[in-house]
Amino acid sequence: MKEAQMTIPDLFRCPISLDLFSDPVTLSTGQTYDRSSIEKWFAHGNLTCPVTMQKLHDPSLVPNHNLRHLIQQWRQMGQPFDPDYLTTIDPLLDMKRGLESPQATLQEKLRILEEIRVSMDETPAKIPFLLQIGLLPSLVQLLFGELDPGFAEKLLPCILKLMSFGEFGSLNMLKEDSKMESLVVLFENGTDMIKQSLCRLVRAISASSETRELCAMIGKNRRFLHRVVRLIHQNSEASEAGIEAVLALCRLESNREELVQQGLINGLVTYILNSETKERNSAATAMAMIEQVLGIERAKEELINDPQGEGTGHSCWSFDTVVVAATKPVQPSDKNKGHDIAETVEVQVGRRTIT
Image (cartoon, rainbow, N blue to C red; front, side, top):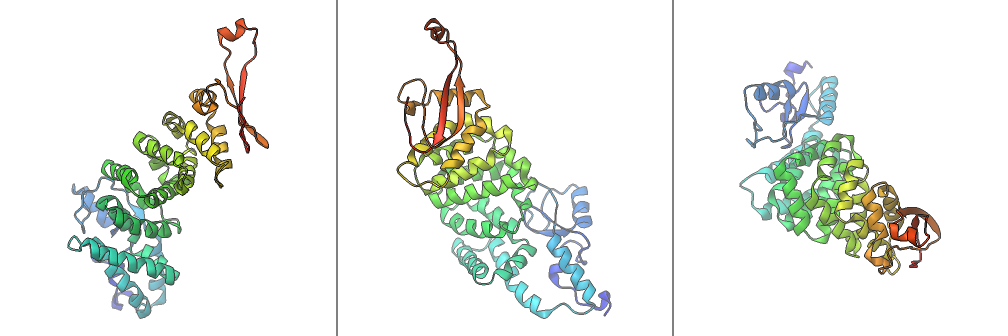
Protein backbone atom coordinates (compact mmCIF):
# COMPACT_ATOMS: atom_id res chain seq x y z
CA MET A 1 0.00 0.00 0.00
CA LYS A 2 1.34 3.43 -0.94
CA GLU A 3 2.09 5.87 1.89
CA ALA A 4 -0.44 8.41 0.52
CA GLN A 5 -3.18 5.79 0.82
CA MET A 6 -2.23 4.78 4.35
CA THR A 7 -3.81 6.32 7.43
CA ILE A 8 -1.09 8.23 9.25
CA PRO A 9 -1.32 7.80 13.05
CA ASP A 10 -1.72 11.15 14.84
CA LEU A 11 1.48 10.40 16.77
CA PHE A 12 3.39 10.60 13.47
CA ARG A 13 1.97 14.00 12.39
CA CYS A 14 3.67 17.31 13.09
CA PRO A 15 1.26 19.50 15.13
CA ILE A 16 2.17 22.50 12.94
CA SER A 17 2.07 21.13 9.39
CA LEU A 18 -0.12 18.08 10.18
CA ASP A 19 2.13 16.17 7.76
CA LEU A 20 4.15 13.05 8.46
CA PHE A 21 7.32 13.82 10.44
CA SER A 22 10.50 13.80 8.39
CA ASP A 23 12.90 15.01 11.12
CA PRO A 24 11.12 14.94 14.52
CA VAL A 25 12.66 17.09 17.25
CA THR A 26 11.46 17.68 20.81
CA LEU A 27 11.34 20.98 22.72
CA SER A 28 11.97 21.40 26.44
CA THR A 29 8.17 21.41 26.91
CA GLY A 30 8.02 17.78 25.75
CA GLN A 31 6.24 18.61 22.48
CA THR A 32 7.62 17.15 19.25
CA TYR A 33 7.61 18.96 15.89
CA ASP A 34 9.12 18.49 12.47
CA ARG A 35 12.42 20.37 12.43
CA SER A 36 11.59 22.47 9.35
CA SER A 37 8.21 23.50 10.80
CA ILE A 38 9.48 24.56 14.22
CA GLU A 39 12.45 26.40 12.68
CA LYS A 40 10.04 28.40 10.51
CA TRP A 41 8.02 29.16 13.66
CA PHE A 42 11.15 30.51 15.35
CA ALA A 43 12.22 32.39 12.21
CA HIS A 44 8.99 34.39 12.39
CA GLY A 45 10.00 35.67 15.81
CA ASN A 46 7.96 33.25 17.91
CA LEU A 47 9.67 32.21 21.16
CA THR A 48 6.92 29.94 22.46
CA CYS A 49 5.91 26.30 22.13
CA PRO A 50 3.15 26.23 19.47
CA VAL A 51 1.03 23.65 21.33
CA THR A 52 1.40 24.77 24.97
CA MET A 53 2.19 28.46 24.21
CA GLN A 54 4.78 28.36 27.00
CA LYS A 55 7.65 30.83 26.66
CA LEU A 56 10.84 29.01 25.69
CA HIS A 57 13.89 30.07 27.69
CA ASP A 58 15.73 27.13 26.15
CA PRO A 59 14.87 26.75 22.43
CA SER A 60 17.08 23.67 22.02
CA LEU A 61 15.83 21.04 19.58
CA VAL A 62 16.51 17.47 20.71
CA PRO A 63 16.26 14.81 17.95
CA ASN A 64 13.53 12.26 18.75
CA HIS A 65 15.36 9.17 17.57
CA ASN A 66 12.75 6.75 18.94
CA LEU A 67 9.94 8.36 16.99
CA ARG A 68 12.04 8.58 13.82
CA HIS A 69 12.81 4.86 14.10
CA LEU A 70 9.13 3.99 14.54
CA ILE A 71 8.16 6.04 11.50
CA GLN A 72 10.84 4.31 9.41
CA GLN A 73 9.46 0.92 10.48
CA TRP A 74 5.94 2.03 9.63
CA ARG A 75 6.95 3.22 6.16
CA GLN A 76 8.80 0.00 5.42
CA MET A 77 5.82 -2.18 6.36
CA GLY A 78 3.76 -0.81 3.44
CA GLN A 79 0.54 -1.50 5.31
CA PRO A 80 -1.64 0.20 7.93
CA PHE A 81 0.11 0.56 11.27
CA ASP A 82 -0.30 -2.24 13.77
CA PRO A 83 -3.58 -1.56 15.62
CA ASP A 84 -2.13 -3.21 18.72
CA TYR A 85 0.45 -0.43 18.82
CA LEU A 86 -2.26 2.23 18.69
CA THR A 87 -4.16 0.38 21.41
CA THR A 88 -1.04 0.64 23.59
CA ILE A 89 -0.03 4.19 22.75
CA ASP A 90 -3.42 5.94 22.92
CA PRO A 91 -3.98 5.44 26.68
CA LEU A 92 -0.42 6.65 27.34
CA LEU A 93 -1.03 9.77 25.26
CA ASP A 94 -4.24 10.38 27.23
CA MET A 95 -2.28 10.21 30.49
CA LYS A 96 0.33 12.63 29.17
CA ARG A 97 -2.37 15.07 28.06
CA GLY A 98 -4.02 14.77 31.47
CA LEU A 99 -0.80 15.70 33.25
CA GLU A 100 -0.24 18.67 30.96
CA SER A 101 -3.82 19.95 31.13
CA PRO A 102 -4.13 23.25 33.04
CA GLN A 103 -7.65 22.18 34.00
CA ALA A 104 -6.48 19.01 35.79
CA THR A 105 -6.44 19.21 39.60
CA LEU A 106 -3.47 18.14 41.69
CA GLN A 107 -5.38 15.05 42.82
CA GLU A 108 -6.08 14.08 39.21
CA LYS A 109 -2.41 14.48 38.33
CA LEU A 110 -1.38 12.38 41.33
CA ARG A 111 -3.76 9.64 40.19
CA ILE A 112 -2.31 9.70 36.68
CA LEU A 113 1.24 9.54 38.04
CA GLU A 114 0.34 6.50 40.08
CA GLU A 115 -1.07 4.85 36.95
CA ILE A 116 2.16 5.61 35.09
CA ARG A 117 4.29 4.23 37.94
CA VAL A 118 2.27 1.01 38.11
CA SER A 119 2.39 0.69 34.33
CA MET A 120 6.20 0.97 34.28
CA ASP A 121 6.61 -1.49 37.17
CA GLU A 122 4.18 -4.10 35.89
CA THR A 123 4.86 -3.71 32.15
CA PRO A 124 8.44 -2.44 31.58
CA ALA A 125 7.91 -2.91 27.83
CA LYS A 126 5.77 0.25 27.90
CA ILE A 127 8.68 2.45 28.97
CA PRO A 128 10.01 2.96 25.40
CA PHE A 129 6.51 4.04 24.35
CA LEU A 130 6.42 6.58 27.19
CA LEU A 131 9.72 7.98 25.95
CA GLN A 132 8.45 8.08 22.37
CA ILE A 133 5.50 10.29 23.31
CA GLY A 134 7.82 12.75 25.11
CA LEU A 135 6.69 11.99 28.66
CA LEU A 136 10.09 12.60 30.27
CA PRO A 137 10.42 16.32 29.40
CA SER A 138 6.79 16.80 30.40
CA LEU A 139 7.47 15.29 33.83
CA VAL A 140 10.60 17.40 34.31
CA GLN A 141 8.61 20.49 33.35
CA LEU A 142 5.98 19.59 35.95
CA LEU A 143 8.57 18.84 38.63
CA PHE A 144 10.05 22.32 38.50
CA GLY A 145 6.73 24.04 37.95
CA GLU A 146 4.43 22.70 40.67
CA LEU A 147 6.87 22.72 43.64
CA ASP A 148 4.45 20.63 45.70
CA PRO A 149 6.43 18.16 47.90
CA GLY A 150 3.77 15.43 47.65
CA PHE A 151 3.65 15.79 43.88
CA ALA A 152 7.45 15.84 43.63
CA GLU A 153 7.70 12.59 45.60
CA LYS A 154 5.48 10.91 43.01
CA LEU A 155 7.18 12.55 40.02
CA LEU A 156 10.81 11.87 40.83
CA PRO A 157 10.71 8.03 40.81
CA CYS A 158 9.00 8.13 37.39
CA ILE A 159 11.59 10.59 36.06
CA LEU A 160 14.53 8.52 37.35
CA LYS A 161 13.08 5.33 35.88
CA LEU A 162 12.66 6.92 32.44
CA MET A 163 16.16 8.41 32.66
CA SER A 164 17.63 4.94 33.13
CA PHE A 165 17.15 4.64 29.35
CA GLY A 166 19.66 7.45 28.80
CA GLU A 167 17.31 10.27 27.77
CA PHE A 168 19.11 13.26 29.37
CA GLY A 169 18.63 16.11 26.89
CA SER A 170 15.33 17.27 28.40
CA LEU A 171 17.12 18.08 31.67
CA ASN A 172 18.77 21.03 29.97
CA MET A 173 15.62 23.04 30.69
CA LEU A 174 17.22 23.47 34.14
CA LYS A 175 19.55 25.99 32.52
CA GLU A 176 16.63 28.43 32.71
CA ASP A 177 17.01 30.66 35.79
CA SER A 178 13.48 29.93 36.99
CA LYS A 179 13.96 26.16 36.72
CA MET A 180 17.33 26.28 38.50
CA GLU A 181 15.73 28.31 41.29
CA SER A 182 12.97 25.71 41.53
CA LEU A 183 15.58 22.95 41.86
CA VAL A 184 17.25 24.78 44.75
CA VAL A 185 13.96 25.56 46.53
CA LEU A 186 12.80 21.95 46.17
CA PHE A 187 16.09 20.72 47.61
CA GLU A 188 15.93 23.22 50.49
CA ASN A 189 12.34 22.40 51.48
CA GLY A 190 11.90 18.81 50.33
CA THR A 191 11.81 15.64 52.39
CA ASP A 192 14.84 13.36 52.71
CA MET A 193 13.34 11.19 49.97
CA ILE A 194 13.11 14.18 47.62
CA LYS A 195 16.69 15.19 48.46
CA GLN A 196 17.95 11.67 47.72
CA SER A 197 16.11 11.60 44.40
CA LEU A 198 17.43 15.03 43.41
CA CYS A 199 20.95 13.85 44.25
CA ARG A 200 20.44 10.93 41.85
CA LEU A 201 19.20 13.41 39.27
CA VAL A 202 22.41 15.45 39.70
CA ARG A 203 24.45 12.28 39.35
CA ALA A 204 22.74 11.54 36.02
CA ILE A 205 23.30 15.12 34.83
CA SER A 206 27.00 14.87 35.68
CA ALA A 207 27.40 11.57 33.84
CA SER A 208 26.09 12.70 30.46
CA SER A 209 27.93 14.69 27.81
CA GLU A 210 24.54 16.13 26.78
CA THR A 211 24.26 17.94 30.12
CA ARG A 212 27.90 18.87 30.78
CA GLU A 213 27.15 22.60 30.62
CA LEU A 214 24.26 22.13 33.05
CA CYS A 215 26.58 20.29 35.45
CA ALA A 216 28.91 23.29 35.41
CA MET A 217 25.99 25.63 36.11
CA ILE A 218 24.90 23.58 39.13
CA GLY A 219 28.51 23.71 40.32
CA LYS A 220 28.29 27.50 40.40
CA ASN A 221 25.07 27.59 42.44
CA ARG A 222 26.31 28.19 45.97
CA ARG A 223 22.94 27.68 47.63
CA PHE A 224 22.54 24.25 46.09
CA LEU A 225 26.12 23.18 46.89
CA HIS A 226 25.75 24.41 50.47
CA ARG A 227 22.63 22.27 50.92
CA VAL A 228 24.27 19.18 49.43
CA VAL A 229 27.26 19.57 51.78
CA ARG A 230 24.87 19.99 54.73
CA LEU A 231 23.18 16.75 53.67
CA ILE A 232 26.49 14.93 54.09
CA HIS A 233 26.63 16.13 57.72
CA GLN A 234 23.24 14.66 58.58
CA ASN A 235 24.41 11.18 59.57
CA SER A 236 21.39 9.65 57.83
CA GLU A 237 20.61 7.53 54.78
CA ALA A 238 20.32 10.73 52.77
CA SER A 239 24.02 11.38 53.42
CA GLU A 240 24.91 8.50 51.11
CA ALA A 241 23.05 10.16 48.24
CA GLY A 242 24.79 13.45 49.08
CA ILE A 243 28.19 11.78 48.79
CA GLU A 244 27.26 10.37 45.38
CA ALA A 245 26.05 13.77 44.17
CA VAL A 246 29.24 15.51 45.29
CA LEU A 247 31.37 12.81 43.67
CA ALA A 248 29.48 13.32 40.42
CA LEU A 249 29.87 17.11 40.53
CA CYS A 250 33.60 16.72 41.21
CA ARG A 251 34.02 15.17 37.78
CA LEU A 252 34.28 18.76 36.58
CA GLU A 253 37.39 20.35 38.03
CA SER A 254 35.71 23.76 37.95
CA ASN A 255 33.15 22.52 40.52
CA ARG A 256 35.66 21.35 43.11
CA GLU A 257 36.86 24.71 44.43
CA GLU A 258 33.31 25.96 44.91
CA LEU A 259 32.42 22.80 46.83
CA VAL A 260 35.46 23.30 49.07
CA GLN A 261 34.34 26.88 49.74
CA GLN A 262 30.96 25.53 50.84
CA GLY A 263 32.56 23.35 53.54
CA LEU A 264 33.14 20.09 51.66
CA ILE A 265 36.22 19.06 53.64
CA ASN A 266 34.54 19.34 57.03
CA GLY A 267 31.50 17.53 55.63
CA LEU A 268 33.58 14.63 54.33
CA VAL A 269 35.61 14.38 57.55
CA THR A 270 32.38 14.34 59.59
CA TYR A 271 30.95 11.65 57.33
CA ILE A 272 34.07 9.49 57.67
CA LEU A 273 34.17 9.82 61.45
CA ASN A 274 30.48 8.96 61.70
CA SER A 275 31.18 5.83 59.70
CA GLU A 276 32.88 4.39 62.77
CA THR A 277 29.56 4.09 64.60
CA LYS A 278 27.32 3.47 61.59
CA GLU A 279 28.10 1.31 58.59
CA ARG A 280 28.70 3.57 55.62
CA ASN A 281 29.01 2.24 52.09
CA SER A 282 30.56 5.47 50.80
CA ALA A 283 33.35 6.03 53.35
CA ALA A 284 36.01 5.02 50.82
CA THR A 285 34.38 7.32 48.25
CA ALA A 286 34.55 10.20 50.72
CA MET A 287 38.25 9.52 51.24
CA ALA A 288 38.85 9.47 47.50
CA MET A 289 37.15 12.83 47.19
CA ILE A 290 39.39 14.36 49.85
CA GLU A 291 42.37 13.12 47.87
CA GLN A 292 40.87 14.53 44.69
CA VAL A 293 40.44 18.09 46.02
CA LEU A 294 43.72 18.37 47.94
CA GLY A 295 45.28 20.06 44.94
CA ILE A 296 43.30 23.10 46.09
CA GLU A 297 45.25 25.07 48.70
CA ARG A 298 42.16 25.92 50.72
CA ALA A 299 41.26 22.22 50.94
CA LYS A 300 44.67 21.46 52.45
CA GLU A 301 44.33 24.23 55.01
CA GLU A 302 40.83 23.16 56.01
CA LEU A 303 41.91 19.55 56.42
CA ILE A 304 44.90 20.52 58.55
CA ASN A 305 42.86 22.88 60.72
CA ASP A 306 39.68 20.84 60.89
CA PRO A 307 38.08 21.46 64.31
CA GLN A 308 37.52 17.74 64.76
CA GLY A 309 41.29 17.50 65.16
CA GLU A 310 40.63 18.58 68.77
CA GLY A 311 42.56 21.82 68.53
CA THR A 312 46.01 20.33 67.92
CA GLY A 313 46.57 22.29 64.71
CA HIS A 314 46.78 19.09 62.72
CA SER A 315 44.86 15.81 62.64
CA CYS A 316 45.62 12.24 61.78
CA TRP A 317 43.00 9.53 61.22
CA SER A 318 44.92 6.26 61.36
CA PHE A 319 43.53 3.35 59.38
CA ASP A 320 44.55 0.30 57.42
CA THR A 321 45.63 2.07 54.24
CA VAL A 322 46.93 5.59 53.75
CA VAL A 323 45.09 7.31 50.92
CA VAL A 324 46.05 10.95 51.17
CA ALA A 325 48.60 13.27 52.74
CA ALA A 326 48.31 17.03 53.01
CA THR A 327 51.29 19.18 53.87
CA LYS A 328 51.17 22.22 56.11
CA PRO A 329 53.74 24.94 55.27
CA VAL A 330 56.39 25.62 57.92
CA GLN A 331 55.68 28.75 59.94
CA PRO A 332 58.48 31.10 61.12
CA SER A 333 57.76 30.10 64.72
CA ASP A 334 58.35 26.48 63.78
CA LYS A 335 61.76 27.30 62.34
CA ASN A 336 62.71 29.03 65.60
CA LYS A 337 62.01 25.75 67.30
CA GLY A 338 64.32 23.97 64.90
CA HIS A 339 61.55 22.44 62.81
CA ASP A 340 62.71 22.93 59.23
CA ILE A 341 60.51 20.24 57.70
CA ALA A 342 56.86 20.43 56.72
CA GLU A 343 54.17 18.98 58.92
CA THR A 344 52.10 16.27 57.26
CA VAL A 345 48.49 15.37 57.78
CA GLU A 346 47.50 11.83 56.92
CA VAL A 347 43.93 10.75 56.38
CA GLN A 348 43.14 7.07 56.19
CA VAL A 349 40.10 4.81 56.15
CA GLY A 350 39.38 2.87 59.34
CA ARG A 351 40.02 3.55 63.03
CA ARG A 352 40.54 7.18 64.12
CA THR A 353 43.49 8.47 66.16
CA ILE A 354 44.45 12.07 66.89
CA THR A 355 48.11 13.04 67.00
